[in-house]
Image (cartoon, rainbow, N blue to C red; front, side, top):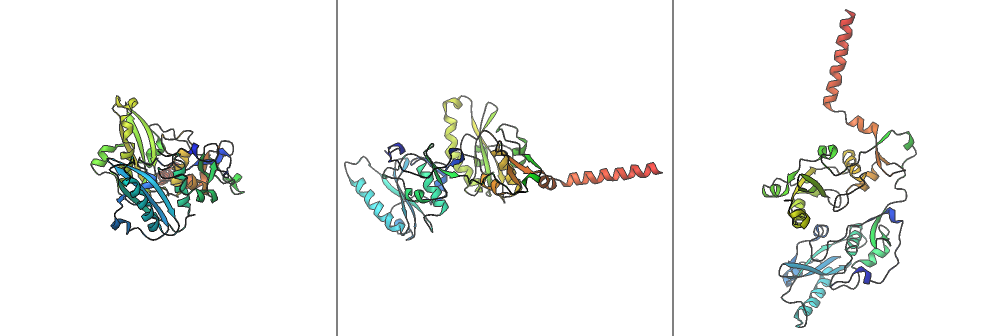
Length: 371
């Protein structure tokens, strides 16, 4: 069994105010599938000589797992800033010795592996991946320290929360500061989402709710980039489980839905749901520009809510922060938008036509009265 974080020696990390920290999503574990990791690594393959020879002689990360019966357990994660192929051969040789040991509890085990390459170990994506593993709380079986801990201890892009005992995204101290002309802008707070049905704003952005089994069985999910919502439906009540998105907001809707469904369908078997005939539903939004004003308006709608979906956080905090048309109120930290910008953009062709007809009617009435 792996060690828990409580058994690890305490380290001194730079910490900021707890209220300013957002934890990096924790890894789902070394046996359970993890979408976060699966998106970054290749497929699991057996560690044959032929397959090991395919591993590039470049800097990268090598994951090794023991597969027996129906389970695959990650036992080792190696970060090598020079040659992951060399590290792979060494790790596999050690693993074979363990399996060959008759006294070992590991029996009828096949060694599998997967890998990814990187240019620099201090790349932001690699740092987040290391924090993702650390925040799991339990070490992989062959580890006595966290993979990439040395990288985390020297980074300035993440901070360690002593209260949460997790690595977090720090919010910049100037996070809520805006240009000096801010007081002259006319702004209005974005209405918060309450995660119930109907939600006028979410309904305007997303497709209608559809049963996940039907969507997958009939191949109805679009093979395009965007984001999607998963919800649990039972007894005519709908509860949003999570908003599924990628590292840069966009994710492939079709592939992401299949992976998320396989991962979340265990919820249907929970005792508090089984008698209620539950099922999962989905709706999606195809998205080309995750940084657009309209996209940021939707993120702000979610961020302003006092609650969150059951799983995962909501996307877009960095996008909204960087958008010059959005500001945060000082007293309650609610996101607001510039009224002039959005009202100018929200004038539809229908409204323009209606305005023209109204003007025309006024002209006709005026001319008739003069005659």
